[in-house]
Length: 338
Image (tube, rainbow, N blue to C red):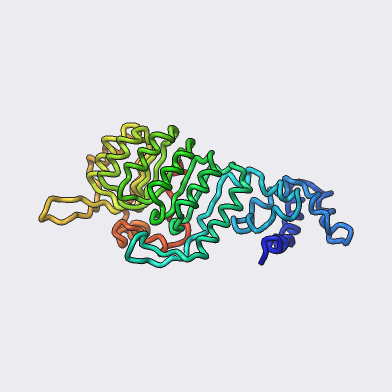
């Protein structure tokens, strides 16, 4: 169905929404213009812009990109309002994929790629560089081209929630980071070679202070953080596999850390051979004492906790697709806002 036709499908919803908003704002004259009489049916361009923006704020990304801006110049103006685009939330859109044995270890169908590309092009055109928060679904397999296209058109980005890393390469993420000079907060999957990314953030993102990791956090990752982002203030490892030596290094080495969230973590201790890896069921007093010096130290070792049970069952490699939509991007730390 053409975008323009889709947009007209929303008109009925707008009519009812305007009458509801009339009670709140007192725009009696506007409501009268929307009475479905023959002489008034073509006066959508007279609708107050503030009301249109308020209505559009209730729409999801699919509705906002369905062709609203093609109805008339007034709707186009409202559809580009910064209030609609400070947060570009694509978390409802995930790729259709199958796992394969070779890199990038997933095959994404062409329809998924085309849909994501289309949404990015329309939304970033409407946003006019107003996006400060960008959220991808964890299982949205973004390409380098899609990521750099987004970076070029969102230079004021402050908060980024990245998707699975499979199709993102070093060149793509580094090029994007160079364009996000104001980046403050990043949520990302754990990666095998973190130095290049953190080094790029260190060189280009001087306000960077918050990091959330989905996936294993080992000694290499923490060493990289201490070297590249020593001023990190907030770190969340929620629902991840956390190595005990890495946790101790975090508490000792990140001198400016204020908030640490290890809720629902699968904590393991690596021991010399022939001893096997040990799962840490209880944090010792040394760790709790060091954590108490932070402004906030969040833990959860409750055997009845559903999230702890999930992390343990998944052995620290959380299978987010098995659980309720959106749980992967939630966090108990309010200061993270992610």
